[in-house]
Length: 105
Image 1 (cartoon, helix red, strand yellow):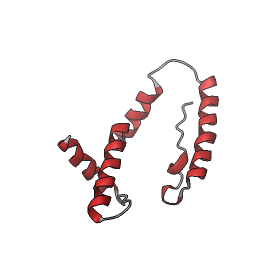
Image 2 (cartoon, one colour):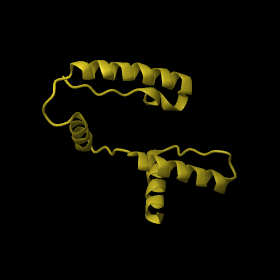
Image 3 (cartoon, helix red, strand yellow):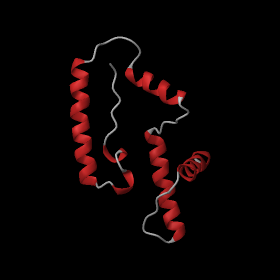
Image 4 (cartoon, one colour):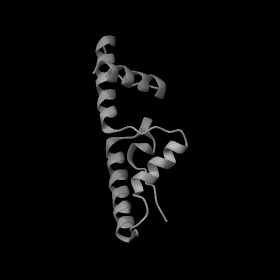
């Protein structure tokens, strides 16, 4: 049986605290390590199977490069608005900002 583990701020991002998210991440990591100790070898790598399942649902993954671009976009937006920080509140605006920076890069 395969497992998919989601931990940290995925639990409740808008209200998550770093300390709670860190604790959730540590607990999740322990569970993943326990699973990996007993996981059978064989078949396509787990990562490939998870990606295939997500893509089949029309979901997109966010590689670390996209996270870096998002951070840059939010920093630029904060500066333009004269704010100390800014976070996009919806996925479409966030993805549009990332795509815009990709084109500029």
